[in-house]
Image 1 (cartoon, rainbow, N blue to C red):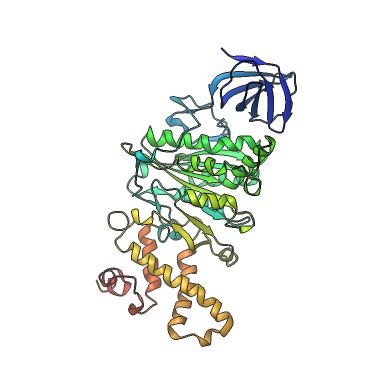
Image 2 (image 1 turned 120 degrees about the vertical axis):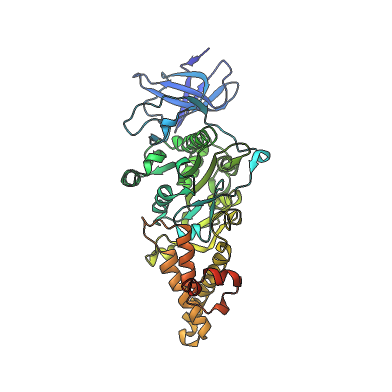
Length: 460
């Protein structure tokens, strides 16, 4: 039996407080009708013997104490069918592309749970993004959670778009899909995203959820849940390999803080709710591979670090939960290098599971280690040069210093539409290492040098 009340006794931000007389379930879907007949949707956030707290998705403007509240007895569900691929939806799951409503084959509750660790398979397969600093030195593996830590004004959205349109599971391109969740972005950013998706044709294999900056903050909390529910349907019902990209998780966490303040909760670190770690973990841990299922979910959360502070609660907690991070460098961006991903503090903890013979190429690990070692040493030498001058360096140190510059301009730097295969990336790495004497290639086995070094390959 549906329950309807006209007992709103307080409206506070995105929340309404309703006196009740019958039991109401947590997360129950609510319909609110204004005095003018406008219908809004909400969700039960808290319930007690006397008061029900409802968060309103479309904002509380126009609501008053005479507005009626109906408790539907159901929870929020996402309508799903294979036709959802190619659609653009709002942050609350409604069509935003002018197309018809989704006719569902199935409707699934959006409040999903983390994958049971006992049912997980270890991520093993390589996903090619076409970006050398990811594929070559911080490889993304199918089923992994690999966030991008960025800063305000850096081109993380361009990187996200490039990953969205170029990513592929090698040999299985026909079963690959992207779920793109944009949270709290501006209208200008939304238009940029959509223009890029349409220009490149990437929309044909994507599902896009757009929550704009002027949309209610509470809707922002729904967006990743809707996206993940869609991803789970595509992966585990339709056997697809799905890449989920969020931008920007910082906006999601800010919405969480705003809701916590409206509910007068006791704040945690820097005003964020104490349950933020749990909430992020529930979102991130819905990625993975389930034993017996052919599909997979891989996540690429993108977050901007306030003040470029990696110890801020959002990147700090995300780093605990996920399997590595990619750091977008302001220093590389100032040099005009794109994508400005700094490989030194970046890390993919599952890289070894998805590279090597049978996945990429047998020399992948060795080449990556050697590139990383000399680039890191070259960056350290730049500090020394600033003190003693380049003339004070040994011949070896000068070679390493030049290698670091060449590495940034030829390996890190690439075009926004440049889609490099993993073999192109490894060959670029070998061409850079060619400038060093073979005796300096201490991290690469001799048989790999004889097989892949450009000096020997030319002789074949």
